[in-house]
Picture 1 (cartoon, rainbow, N blue to C red):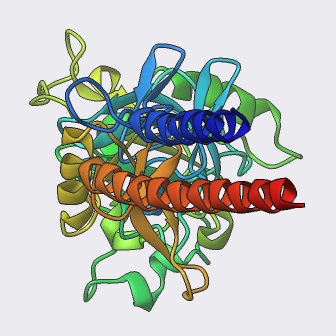
Picture 2 (picture 1 turned 180 degrees about the horizontal axis):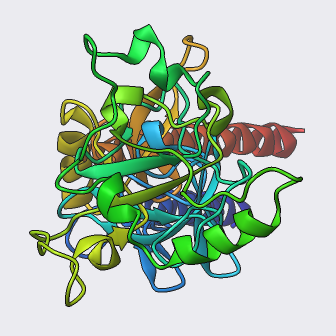
Amino acid sequence: MDLFFFFIYGVITSMMMIMTADMAAATYTNGGGHTAAAYTCRSYCGNLSVDYPFGLRAGCGHPGYRDLLFCINDVLMLHVTSGSYRVLDIDYAYQSLTLDEPHMSTCGAIFLGRRGNGFVVEPWRAAYLQPAPDNVFMLLGCSARSPLFQEGFRAGKHLPCRNVSGMGCEDYYVCPAWNDVFGKLEHDHDGSPPVTHPPECCAVAFGTMKAINLSKLDCQGYSSAYSLAPLRLGRQGGGGAEGWSYGIRVKFSTQGGGGDIFCKSCRSTGGSCGYEAAAGRGGSYTNACICGTSNSTRNCDSAAADIRSDSSRGTWSIMGTVAGSFLLTFLTHQVYLEI
């Protein structure tokens, strides 16, 4: 009777341990056979969707955009070397971001005194994030000592200042905000004749400068505008600078498309696109498909296959352990009976 009890106990224990292992493996797969991620990298900040290649959580998105976006009180902020900017829009179809910062001049307000951020990105991030070619930066109040006017920036005898996509300083000088600037300049002088003309303005494309650093360029302020549609000519009826879109329009890419291909494969199997530190390569990162509580270097189908394989090996290991325990118990019982 005792022998029969030990036999039944061993069989039931084995079955329960095997079922537990199988259930653990099953939690990684959804009804369609694809791995179900325990959490998704896609998220929202206010009314903006944050999706690949961006991410708000560590390990989410493309490694080129790590530590870039932050959600603060439902306001999406972008942080680079030059400072923080509010993200007004993310256009995934055209791969562009629209940014704003409080001390950037517009047609309605002029900010001098080097309070603006300008725009400078980290060298390693520059390959992924650059202002759009049709984005114009208008540098205001630059001194005669500015690098803008030195030989290094000259194209022959010509200064780098030029119109960008039909936008330039001539139209910008007509903005009503300059009337306020004239009034302040006329009353803030120290015994010198009142200033009746606006500060020097130089319109440039970002590609010419590679960085908009007001301190290094020795400029007092800047404005930034971009074009979403053909500009209306003339200054009547909202044409000219009053009709421009003000902000910094930044293009983003994942360089070469390898990450995009990986991400499509990952998503097609129910995963979230992310990254992880590359083993043995300090400071470098590799693509990762986030599948449940584990990551895969391919996709979630391969991760599920690995989990099932590990589970199968674990099941046989459990069966061997239980069988050994049962045999040991049986032999111990036999010795006890003989004694």
